[in-house]
Image 1 (spheres, rainbow, N blue to C red):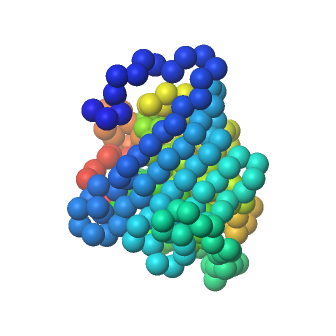
Image 2: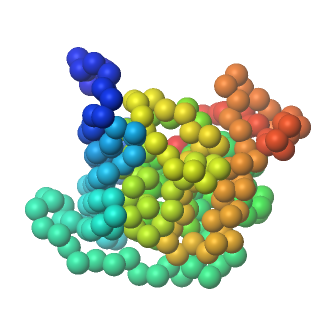
Length: 239
């Protein structure tokens, strides 16, 4: 209801703010953590500003803010003071099978960038906390294996990862644009930490390209489609 509001669709040449007041409702309800996200996108849907706040964060300052072309900064919990902070180089930086994240969890198996013996880490809950982790260097990357998505779940995360020195694109390596509340992205969203090697980035993109989420269900046992991509059957899982 809040999202629909009373405002008409965005007009040509109009910028818009996108707010997600609670990303990770399950985490909010269970005390496992949630994210507050805000983004400004231009008339083409390109993120210009992104801010993510994690009230339960203790490892780093709880707020990260990104401005296109100006990098990522960190802020205190109140948000009135910038904090000088640089995430340390992670221990996984030189590993062939670094920690990674996926959503939905049920996609692992059909989509395994580092093989079947390297499952993704599980972080509750929602997509933004995974973008936060990638920008902070706690995972080599995050792959959202869905093509029909909601702008408020992803706009601020995409620009925060990109301005942290990492990368964020669709499954084909193209920019992700948020032209409306709901948007389509080819091959899902693939982001990588700034410490991810080129080989790791390639594996994440290749895995996204090989996986497709069927609109009407599917089966892990079904053969690949004409593009060599595998379908999986969506199931209840921690996102």
